[in-house]
Image 1 (cartoon, helix red, strand yellow):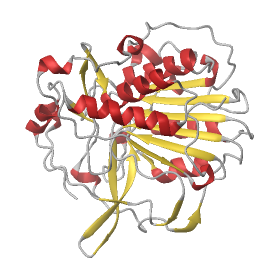
Image 2 (cartoon, rainbow, N blue to C red; image 1 turned 135 degrees about the horizontal axis):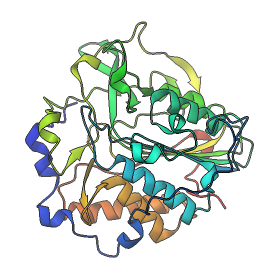
Image 3 (tube, helix red, strand yellow; image 1 turned 120 degrees about the vertical axis):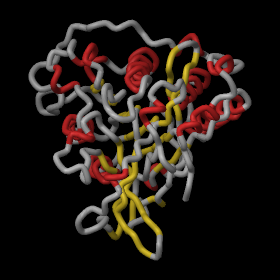
Length: 357
């Protein structure tokens, strides 16, 4: 598959600077404005990512936002989108701030936490947050995992001229590995293994405002691998000053097959009900751009707008319908190359409520 993204391609993502700031008809843009930064008194004790010390309530969320400051592929809206999701879950879904783990790479945000080191969006912290989210779950729990940042592909298998890839999330320290060929990423398999800990009767919702969301739900054999998508030569330095930024990271040195190839399993199905929302199909690319004079992830804007219109307790099928209609409306204003993706595991049987009553 090929979806070229030369340096000039970002300019085609929107029709014009004037249209970048325009609003969709019937939208709820006023509810999308980020909340001012506040520091709420914490009742947590000890390690916030240790489920034994701070197990959380029956509704919990892990939200990751990365802007990669000072690094290749710097974004502008990853942290802001993550903050908006945190606000949405507290204000619209009734989830306590004590039951949300917000990890970012914005020092002005994580430095305000009682344990700043545990609030940075590193690979280790994201994996620990996933364990906090899932390990002590019981039937009836509902958990959310949100990632706003770069997605990427790591080649896992090559045969007959084709390359199959593991989809990965890119933490803020992805390029800090001692071996450039083995970045510090969170793989599809990492997320899948965490979800396997959720019991029957629990419900999980994944929200990826990134490219290459992958297939972290049920899997069999190597069906979770995706076809490699060539983006052409991406000059991230030239893109740095552009108002439209893609949310994929493509680095030549990452195209290394892991030792032993991909891990194949006969079948590995989740026991819980689970759904995944993603910004775009594997061969597409999602973007962030100025909306209402602020940088926003287009998918976060679309999905929150849809949820505000139909309500968070609506069936996910209705949310998806509204999100796709809003995407179609926005494509009349912006030259978007992204379509909302929605998938659910076998255990769900049918699309579930976004927020279970």
